[in-house]
Image 1 (cartoon, rainbow, N blue to C red):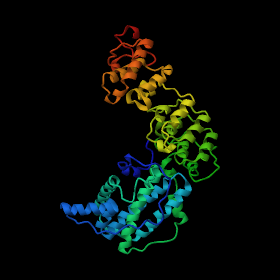
Image 2 (cartoon, rainbow, N blue to C red):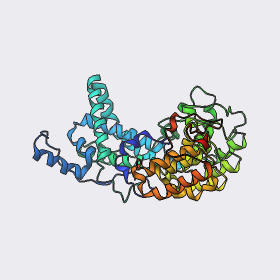
Image 3 (spheres, rainbow, N blue to C red):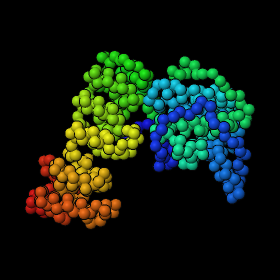
Image 4 (cartoon, rainbow, N blue to C red):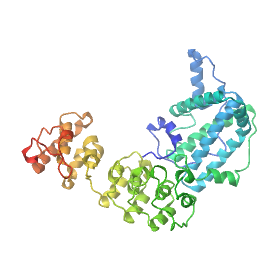
Length: 445
């Protein structure tokens, strides 16, 4: 479940092969970057385009873009980058990290403020719209062509970390151009009011007030994610929900506030009730490999076979998309749930691990089905339909698993009397359990 900072999505193309996650913050002062000449305007000319690409290799897409702008437009662009820095700072779970990251954001904000405010006052609505459109195009390009200052060796692949790191590199390009323009630098530290306004933890750009607007939860969400150790949730309306079903427990989990999480459990939070995206907290914590929270929920009595509108906790845990949150162990949450007794079955076959293994060949595929055959209690006809598709070569990516699929076919015939060919299972009637009935199979009527 991608629940994090929207800005990070701009760099998704480059993160197809991320490096190992690291924890580091960008320095308050940017690194020095070589000054280069502005690219020629006539990009239709091959020589001009080649010169432009050489510049991109030195200062990145955003650095080349800044070189083309006049000072007022540069102030607008760098003001946008300052906003990205602020957003990147606010998405760090730890309060002290949010505060530390806010200093460079404040510095860039203050440095461009006079020229930016003057530009906003002088430009027409049409001019501003044109700027916004071009800026968006450049940011998309910057996500696909990484800045040379960002290398796989120094990349922070944690979502909140990368967003701030990416914005910090662009901020360094801004400081380079502002130096060239003679714009005075600033010193000092953010005011307490600035820190208070911008260090509240944010989820998808929303602080607690926005996430819990029109509910009675905001006053109780206020102290969460601020590094406090004691909470009073006795009067909190724990059953209320905010943005997309967000609960107070979800909020504490998103910003990794363990003290608030424990306090909410002690206050009587219903651990099996739907929350963010309609998922009980066990499903959300399993999906994102938040092992401490998942363990705490199970220890407190949450259902190990909890299910949301899309999948069970076990199926959610089997995905490795968010494995970086658990230090790279894609199966850690899955193994924890299994150790606590999570079932491989699900009332709907499509929501079971048998379907996941049989269709995708994930984590051993049909060999894993054989290894866990004694636990199978799902729909044999649906599984047979998958086996038949594999054996007939209709699932091209599963050709290497045909031998194991043939063994499962034999077990389905022996134990359940399934008839082959299976037929179109989607068109067949179902029994009281929801299992498919093969109409032309005597043993399956």
